[in-house]
Amino acid sequence: MMLKKISRKTFLNTYPDFPTANYRKNAFTYPNSYGHYILYVEAKSTKGLCNIVAGEFAKLMKLSNYTEISFLGDTTTPWLYRSHDYKPVACALNYLVENNISKTFNGAIITDSLNRVEFFKHLFWLVRCNGVVFYPHFSDANFNIVGSICQYGNIHLSTLSKEADRVFHEKLQQTKFTITDESKCTGRIFGRRALSV
Image (cartoon, rainbow, N blue to C red):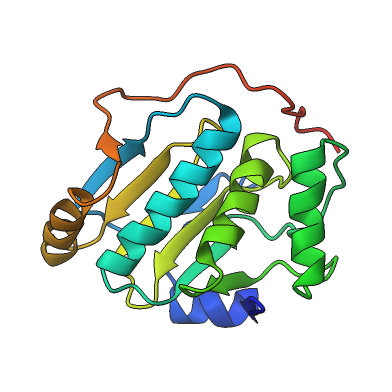
């Protein structure tokens, strides 16, 4: 099943508090949050981490009854702005091309339960190895949560209301995710490219 797309302008008109960044103007948008959490899973390899995180993310979204999850970069840079020769990243970029993401598209990509795991596996590599030059954030259709995956494979998730926070904590117990008490993520990453184009 193909990914759905929505223009950046249309998406941000619908969700004006969605995370955005203009680094030249030092201007940032992020919604008021009820709670903020860093979620991680244990894995023996990077490939294993990718598979587990993608599967558990999809499971958490399904348990929470979030049928559509939208992903949007925080800047206006297109998804396919740069090329990459590291095989997992090249494969991820090709996946976007196969799903009709054009070289100039900088809008939101919407996933459903049928394509969420596959999309998130590719997103894992794009973020881990600088295959995209922005920070892609995600949210559900009713804007209950906002989050992102970092280069270390952890999910940074904010709940946007007391009820969303309650649902999050209830459903999290049915996944392999653990909330870390660390204030930031660290680790060495093979295949990661510097941010220069």
